[in-house]
Each structure stands twice: as structure tokens, then as C-alpha cells.
Image (cartoon, rainbow, N blue to C red; front, side, top):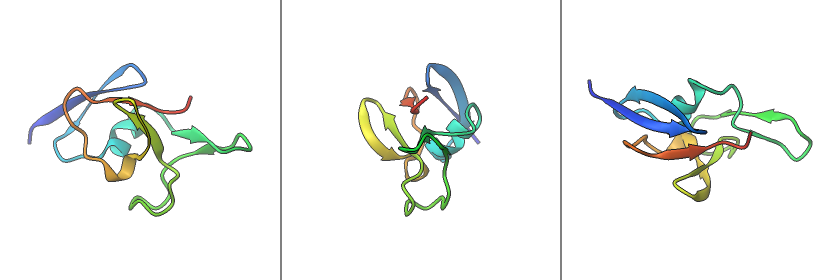
Length: 80
């Protein structure tokens, strides 16, 4: 299986072709964003219903990382 290289918060991440952005982020971060109350948030449902995995991908805000397949060169930013 081939591998895909992308950037997560400036870090180089490599995942199997067909993996989601959520899988790539999970390699370098335990949480993806913070709730309005400051609690760490990460994917809950894994199928796009909960919106807990929202990130910025290639300057597009509020994308659900669990629903986006990783592509070579993609720039992903979590809310750190």
C-alpha cells in the first residue's frame, strides 16, 4: 500500500493511502480543538455526526477531519 505525506500543525505525518485526516492527526495530537469551556475535544463518532474533529485544511475552516481523505501535501491545522 502506498503512503501519503501531509503536514499537521507543521509536523510531517505519513499515513496509508485512503486514511482520513483524523487518523493522521491522531499520530501527533491527542486532541484536535478545545470546546468553548476549554475542554479538549477529539473525534467521537468517526462518521461526521458529532463535529468534534473540526480542523482547518489548506486554509479552509471547520472541516471534519474524519470525513476527509488525506492527500499528499495537505496542510492541516488543529486548534492548539
